[in-house]
Image (cartoon, rainbow, N blue to C red):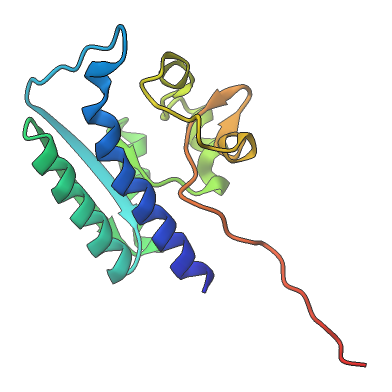
Length: 161
């Protein structure tokens, strides 16, 4: 059940992103550059996550015809085997899925962008995200990632009397 909730949460988050971009030109001081751009994205997951993410990418490209998104997906272990050489060559994709256990390592090597200035300027709107959720992707006062959702990390046993 937890895996499905994470996937649904990720899909919901990604479905909201296209709506944010169309509103940027309505924010004071924001300039939306419509020159052609190519972004690279990489993630791990099963068939459901892959299909859902590709559908969101297709929708985003349809709403933003100047954006081309090249994507690559793998299983969890394969993903990290592929990502390591990209990191070593300072050639990571523009958008990557990051596991919390690697956040410190990749940020300490300055491979991840601090998103704090983008959040402070309003380019990334985090007003509807709980503070604790934002902190889950932060280290040393810098935000390197935004959570795709919540997963409980505990189990309970109820004893019948």
